[in-house]
Length: 117
Image 1 (tube, helix red, strand yellow):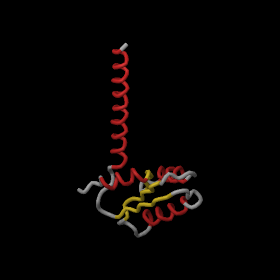
Image 2 (spheres, rainbow, N blue to C red):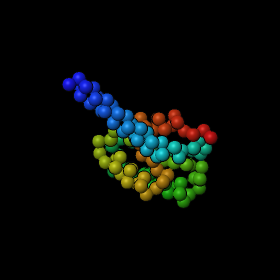
Image 3 (cartoon, rainbow, N blue to C red):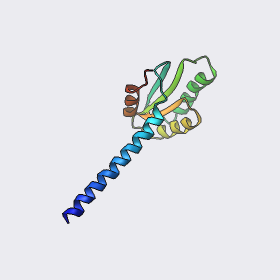
Image 4 (cartoon, rainbow, N blue to C red):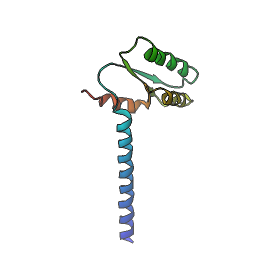
């Protein structure tokens, strides 16, 4: 019985570790495109589903079609919105590569790890 319990604990921890490794690999490939040159716009949002799409589209338009070539990315840091703010921003991020959507905690981690090369 003790062998079964120890084996179960071992395999549970192994699967959890594998999950964490896969999650970190996805995180690295998603967020390591950031470089230290240029200006990043970080927008902290909470419960702004009625305004977020128009606001983001106006900034994206300035980056893609305007004279804002020094702007590199827009990072939308959602602060635990209770409405559809995060989903609207994620939908836009699928259409525009300059837009990244994260949580506030993830945003801080990304900025702490910006490639300085």
